[in-house]
Image 1 (cartoon, rainbow, N blue to C red):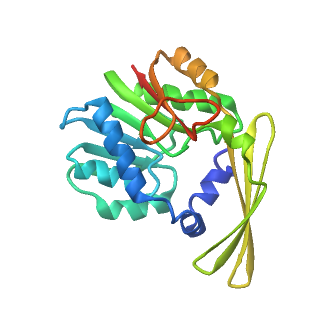
Image 2 (cartoon, helix red, strand yellow):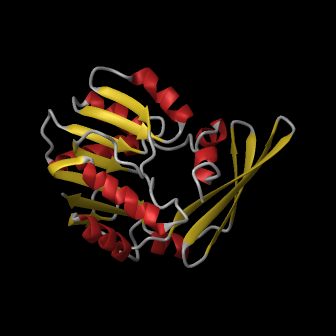
Length: 243
């Protein structure tokens, strides 16, 4: 699939994507950042790349702590929105995560399952390689991914959500490679249909990526409190790797 027709390039760039997911908890996001910063013990002058930053909620908070933060996302609309928050220590730019950004950072954060969208598994490896390239020597990267095993086991096949007067009909299915979500709704007399898909990547898949690019896996956590990862019970799979 090319980026010209890729689902994530169209869906993430719509206003409806942000309406559907407006419930995302900023307090939870900030708590996660606090736990992560405490664990990583980053220097106060550290530079952080927020890769696939969306509208920048994590980037803005991290910059408020004094870090030098760059937020990158493929969605032009998201970056246009996030850019209103730019300061001396906070910058945003449109960028494809599969390509190496021409600067290096002390840390790279890839948060909230902003990975595994591609049909071609080589694109996943390209992204991991790009992250490796974007880190300074001994830099640290954080990949916050869903626990695909639990997500598949507890898949909700059909769900209806009403947000801002719009009724979103969500259907989910899975196969050996992906978890798929279809989003159908009507607005102002027009019908819309979008899809999401995320590859069912397990820890062993990530370990293979990390080994191929030269990352050292340091820790794996299962939630935003940084509890130990458990493949049966954990909702998240948060991986810390070092260059």
